[in-house]
Image 1 (cartoon, rainbow, N blue to C red):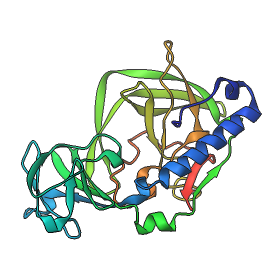
Image 2: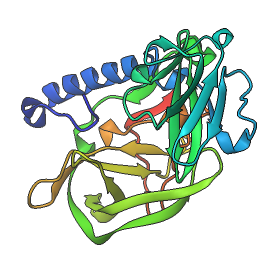
Image 3: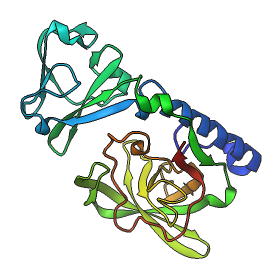
Length: 272
């Protein structure tokens, strides 16, 4: 269940809405703590930082070949590609599916190929990571109807890309397609959003409590707007970004204009 899924009954019945939220929360905990969830990421290694192709702790030799990555391995490396042992060299593109489906494995580990703005990286997912062993849950505040707000999506005339700092300290482009506009305590507010491939929206936002009562920023993923632009802004389903669970993600920080002047005390707040 995505952050924007709501049953029709839950939309009209407070008790059903609370139960719906609880199921969503339990599934989130299961997803985060799964074998190849965000807690299992132990490293994001940019190949530009390893010109000789050798990455400490990662088997094989990984080289940036421009339009692809070249991976070479010996039998002792214990690497498999598409389920078959690799001895020799193979060309790789980016892994775009779920982590368990990544082409390269080394024992239980999954070595996923990533590209951002023309740069290549290898991500190391290990189900035996210290972060996964230490995980105790997600601090979250249960469903409160007052934080389900009607809004509208206002698309830009043209998509925009803004430069924002990422969790790894680098600055990258963040694509934005419009704003969701909503009211809170009599005042109008807006969040700049991207539109996902399925039509749903994605906002990276902070609020007056960020970094104190909640993580320094969060995600919000409303469902696709209606034909008239109407959208439900449900802060009860505010999500912790992947970098809240592992230091090796490159989550974008909120773009300019996406820090709300009030505290959002609901949704996911912190990792326990």
